[in-house]
Length: 430
Image (tube, rainbow, N blue to C red; front, side, top):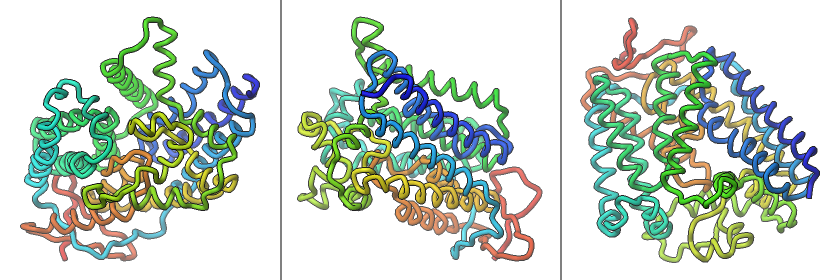
């Protein structure tokens, strides 16, 4: 068990590094709401604040090495992402596909309707839980992925597309509200929250809204309050305030779970868990009846939380546990390289969105901000699948379009703006 002062110091230094990286990106972007905001709102409480609360109120579980390794890795990830994101691109990365600005309103309605229809069989199977969606979430952990995840992805697509539709705020609000209702019936609070992040990224990188530090803090506090309210509405807490605090803090058990992996000297898996998370998790059980229950992060669940694994209540949360199980102490190198790649790809995606102002590129920016169309939890990093959706959206946006745009790299990069966004410039014709 680690000394409390040492744990405080380790977490505090790592938190300062994370805040410093956020401030650096914010100053570069000219806004304190940016691509790091979604992850900051979720990770700062989960990785730093609530673990500190738990340590103070209960105990510091795990070795000093474990704490140092976890928070050094998080610090390295934050620094490398911010550094490579902040490096200016010399030229726009071009995609060899045409794109247009048609059909966004119609497509958004189609996506929302399909999202509801795809999820309808689940609601018909569990009608008694419609007013208790969390129970639907529990009952559909296995065997319902094709319906649940497809419905969620379609709902997110509907939100993204309606933002670019050029319709009134009222109409956009109705579609976004419908998507929120459908996602809330899935029983996952995180899925509803992601709608706000899609809207935020649209405001920052398409509408070019700028948020001061005070505005960003007020917004983050509002979101935090909303999260607490959603938790309070879906949980039955103990009879004392201490039990309530412990229950809430246990929802951010990333650090404690990572310590289990590190301190147990779990056998190195040589990348097997990461590979399985990026492949097997995407295959619906309907198409693969022999799909194992123990793969990727679920291998760790079976090892460290056998009762939870047997009850099929999902995999526990890990920050770097899967990577440490795969690569041992070299996980910090792997995750550092991965953070650098993500930072560079995020820079490329943001620069592209500034030129195209197209929903396909907003999907890419959101993906780099950890706001994904595929709500499959901690399983995998689905960049190829996201790129496939991006290509599909670009293709569909050309159908019925009066003008079709192409990206050309010249000495001065041309800008093509969506008609849904006020601008004096016109999209470049093919």
